Image 1 (cartoon, helix red, strand yellow):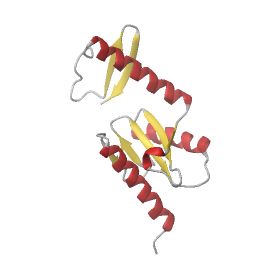
Image 2 (tube, one colour):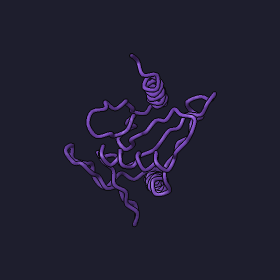
Image 3 (cartoon, rainbow, N blue to C red):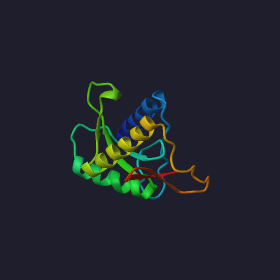
Image 4 (cartoon, rainbow, N blue to C red):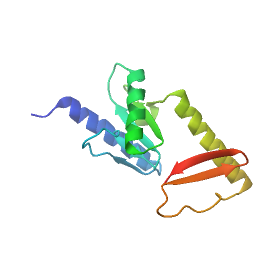
Length: 144
C-alpha cells in the first residue's frame, strides 16, 4: 500500500530540487539511509529540509535542519516550506539568525573579492576539506 504523505513529500522534494536545477544550481535529493541528512543537497553548502504541510513548526524544523546539515558535513541547514496555491519560487525559506548572519557575511566577503577582482589566497588542494577565503580582517571557511 502506498503512503500518501510519502508520495506528497517526495513530489515536493523533487519540485524543490528541479527549481534549483532550473536556476543553474547543483541540487540532488538525498537517499535516506541511516542518519537523516536532509531532503535535498544544494550546491556544496546547504542541506535542505522540504516541508509540504499546512501547519508550521518552524522551531523544530530549523533545529532539525541544522542537525541534519551537521550530520551531512554541510555549512547551512534550511527549511523550505511550501505555500498553498503558489509556485515553488514563492515558498518560504526558514533559517535561524545565526545561519542568516553567516550567509550575509559570506556574501559580503565574496562581493568584496569580486569588486576588487581579487582571487582567494590560494587554490585549494583537490584533497583539502576546507578552504579559507579572507578579505582584510574578514574570513569565511568553505567546505570543498
